[in-house]
Amino acid sequence: DSSITDGLIDGVDPSGYNDADKAMRIMNVIIQKEPNNIPARFARANFLYRGGSIEQATEEYMTIKTKLEAMKKAGVIKESLEKNTSYQNVTRNLKKIGTAK
Image 1 (cartoon, rainbow, N blue to C red):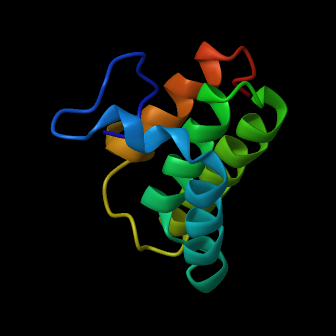
Image 2: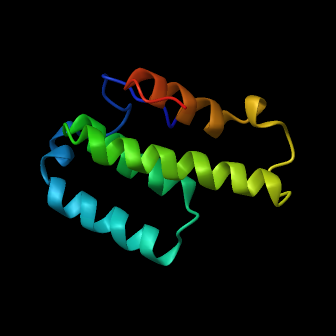
C-alpha cells in the first residue's frame, strides 16, 4: 500500500527503520536506475514524510502524480486515473499534507 500510515508494516522489524541514511541511499539508487519506479518513489516519499521532510516529500509526491499522468497519456495506464490505486494514493497523500492541486 502506498498510502501514508502511522502504523507498523506487518512482518517488518521496526528496528530496521533506524538506518535512515542506508534506506535513502538504496531508494535513491533504485530511482536513479529506474526513474519511473512508482513503488520506489512512494517508499521514498513516505519515508521523507515520516522523517519530517515535508517539503521534499511533497516534491516526490508531485513527481509521482506527474509521472502517473504521463503514463496515462502514453497509454501505459488503461483505467481512468480516478480508478488507479497509485493515483488515488498520491492524491490522498497530497491532500493529507495539504498540497493537493
